Amino acid sequence: MKNIIKTYLLIGLLSGLLLIIGGLIGGQGGVVIALFFSLIFNMIAFWFSDKIVLRMYKAEQIDRANPSGLYEIVEHLAKKAELPMPKVYIIPEDAPNAFATGRSYKTAAVAATRGLLNSLSKDEIEAVMAHEITHIKNRDTLISTLAAVIASAIMHLTAIAKWGMIFGFGRSDDDDRSGGLLVTILVIILAPIAAILIQSAISRSREYIADKGGKTLVGSGMPLANALRKIDAASQQGYKMNAQPETAHMFIMNPISGKSVLSLFSTHPATEDRIQKLLYE
Image (cartoon, rainbow, N blue to C red; front, side, top):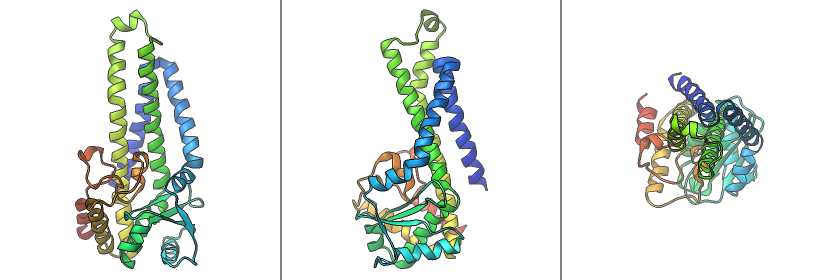
């Protein structure tokens, strides 16, 4: 419950930040621009994000005939979670990882890399898929998409403000004398950092919740803890995905880097923290 409340508070904070930035940069007109950006980005993400990300990673849809057994594992977990059967995909990557996507239960999909299927035992694969099924059940795919597009809108808005300053749009002597220029500069520098921090905090909270849900679904935290150890070890050994930073939050573990330089900017909790919670809470 603590992480759920935290998630919605952070979503509210991220949305508020977007409106504040719009107001600081352009007054009431800036707020309207911010709302317009938010609406456009959210509509695009709502309808097309799942298709875009699956195509981005060349994911191949499978059915029961696939010999990997992944389809049957997902089918069993979906029934247990009382969810419609999601679409199942395999990503042709050797690095072990997985993610869930889709704006609703009906459009939901789970994807696992070839490396995950080859390097994990059946109960570990089941635990990873239970984690992803929990993401779907909790509508985390929609929440994370919402957070990502609001953060993206903030980035675009500050970029507009930056170029506006460079070419002198929307500036006046009165603004400069009143410190408006200094405020705008600070917003341009700090707003994207704040947006990334908030988006990362939302992602970390949802990962903890999905870990707990996956543990409940399979009846033990040990298989997922073992899977996380193996995925993390593979990352440390150089198994990296050809992944995009804007989609890193979707995966069960960051596909770009095994460890974050600054934990505040990490989209995922530390692996050892997740394992400790799975085994002892």
